[in-house]
Length: 76
Ligand SMILES: [Zn+2]
Image (cartoon, rainbow, N blue to C red):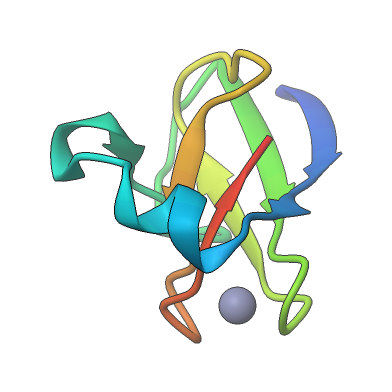
């Protein structure tokens, strides 16, 4: 069964913008391949280190994520 996959490259945010983002707004990324059986997933590229994380929901433009590898904040 093939899952629908999109790949989004994150955008770097300034320190000032990152400081204004509340933790509740920051989405969780999972390592690729860890979640089985997801019908829909989106792959998100960290713009700082290039790590690809996996989001189990549809990613809206302007969503914030924290890189699971380097911990940097970025947005889609
Ligand atoms: Zn990173």
